Length: 110
Image (cartoon, rainbow, N blue to C red; front, side, top):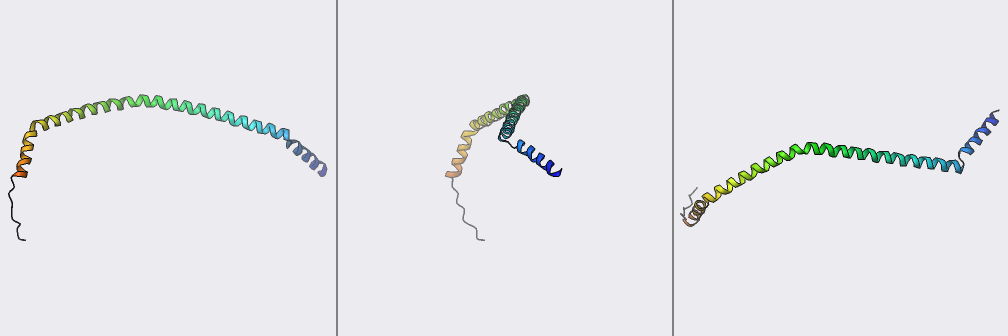
C-alpha cells in the first residue's frame, strides 16, 4: 500500500509540475504583481495629494511671516541708508583728516 501511495503522490507531483500548470502559475504571479503595483501607485498618488494639501494649508502662515520680516528688513535698510547719507560727508572728512594729518610718535623703549 505504501508503494501505491508513493506512486499516487508522484503522479500528482508530475501533474502539478507540467509546463501548462507552471505557465498558469507564472501568469497568476505576474497578474498579482501588476495588481499590487497598481495599488501601490494609487496609494502613493493619494498620499502625495494629501501631502500637497497639508503643505498648502501650512505654508500660508509661513508666507505671511516671511512677508512681514521682509518689510521690516526693508525698513531697517532704508533707515541705515538715510543715516549713512546724512553723515556721509562728516565720515569722509574724519577719514581724510586721520590719514592726512599725520602725527608721528617715536617708539617707546620697552
